[in-house]
Image 1: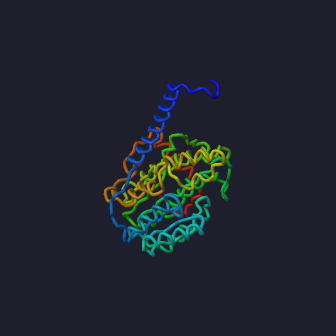
Image 2: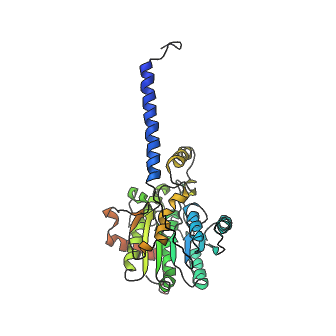
Image 3: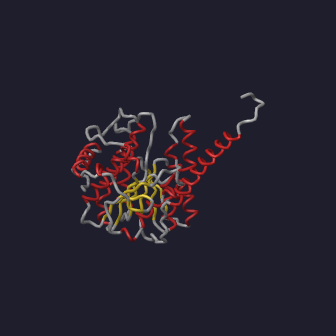
Amino acid sequence: MAWYEIPNTNAVSIYSSLLFGVITIIVVFRMWLKATCGKFESKVRMDGKTVIITGANSGIGKETARDLAKRGARVIMACRTMETANKARDQIIKESNNENVIVKKLDLSSFKSVRDFADDIIKSESKIDVLIHNAGYANSFEKKKSADGIEMTMATNHYGPFLLTHLLIDLLKKSQPCRIVIVASECYRFANLNLNNLNPVDTFPGYLYYVSKYANIMFGQELARRLKGTNITVNFLHPGMIDSGIWRNIPFPLSFFMAILIKGYFKTTVEGAQTTLMLACSEDLKNVSGKYYMDCKEAELQPYIMDVDKHKVLWDESVKIVKLTDSDPKI
């Protein structure tokens, strides 16, 4: 067709209809995501409760800390980057009118840092009402090891929380009733945990985020089983796909397309914190343990991640990797 010819009106009409249809589907899908987003609407107070939140300086951890401070809790923000954490604390105190918000140094990728943090908590705190394993690390392409020689994603997302839970378990037992909340992910569905290679330093780093979430869920189930009969509950959750700093390591140009997807379809950090808050606060869940939640509702796990024998193998091997000693607390 020459440049001066009039376009076929039927073709224009078809293209316009297709474009309208695509836009309609996108808008409707986004509206559906917002409509089905869970919200913890309880006004339950947390006065007198002490809550530890790892990775509370940004993202859903910061929103969780902000909400709990507004409910009157004593909030301990366990963070790696102190400058960012202190700014977040000051902001939370100002917004909540709750001065009982403190920051403590914790680098979950370092076993020494985890031990130093646990020692500090044991000396300074008389109880822990809620321990929230929120901190998460995702590295898309660059292979990294921790100071202990552990693959960085697994060190931060699984082994650090595993060690911290052990070191604080005696204080948690003294604090009963109390709760442990683990922020996992539906991304476990895209992974498989190789029990013969639990320090996968040569594996593609982006994939290991999914593997670490797989480990979180297995750890949560085994922890709940071992604490059965106590008044310590353990539950874990999928917060949703969140518009947070965890995506900052994605390189260009993939980051450009991810930014469009994130801003259009991912949850805000406030929305992403809702299920964590429910598991930390809800009176309806005070006797519930070993369950998986998303959008403030119980969700089903795939059968392959519920193998008790595999849970025990992961547990026993994790004990060796984090170098728990006979003098350390036992679960």
